[in-house]
Each structure stands twice: as structure tokens, then as C-alpha cells.
Image (cartoon, rainbow, N blue to C red):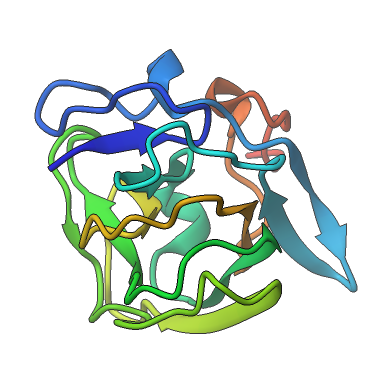
Length: 170
């Protein structure tokens, strides 16, 4: 399966580590309405029939939580049956669906925000990532942004280029 990061670099499961440059980094991290949110810049994939992967999300931010996962279509693509999910990894290289797919049929041909909830209660992985279009449908002109909200505060996510030093352990 062809997989690319948000910057269109190739990602190979089992080989590419979640903090490698191919994944890129979250553009924005901060609180909105008291809720921790991660967002990417505009994703405009060069390979429109590849699975697009978000940057990694440290497990400490998602484990045993209910979170919101979203993408905002800014340039509509084709009317195909693209899907959207959240995957987990214990080693940062090998991935499985963390929960059932968030949606088996999103609408990449409609602009706007599409939000889904992910119940990660009693789910524990070292890393998470969003995956869009793992069915490899050709989305043609699609472009948009990825978002994750409802994450736990704290945790050092410096490796991902989104800053933060975590809570004081004393």
C-alpha cells in the first residue's frame, strides 16, 4: 500500500519510525476552549491515491481517553469512498487500527470540517497516527488539514516539533 506523510514523503510500515522526517510535524499545538488540540498545515498530497498519514501523537496524550479526530477539506476532491481512522503502534514502526475505523466513507468531494470521535478507553499504545484513504481511492485534487482534540495535558512532545516540556514531576 502506498503511504505518504503530510508532506508527501513515502512512509514504509516496519521501517519508517514515527519521528522520522517523512512524517513531518504538527504545525500548531495549543489549547482551544481549554482543550489541547494538534493541527497540521494544509496537506496537498502529490500522490492522490495514496494513504495519507498524520504526524505521530505520543500515546501519553491519547491513552485511555475519548478524543476527537477531524480533517478539514479546503479543496474538494473526487466523490470516492475514502476512509478515515486512527492507528496505534507499540514500537513506532508497526501499526494497527486502534479502534474500528472512524468512517468507512468520508466525503472528500465536499469542503468543510468532518469530525469523528475515537473512544480510546482502555486502549494503550506508545504512538498514534491518523490515516486517511487507506483504501487508496484516487481523490484527485483534494487538499485539507488534520486535527486531533481532547488530548491529555502534559507529556514531552518536543521530538515532534510542537514544543512543551511536560508537567513538573516534583
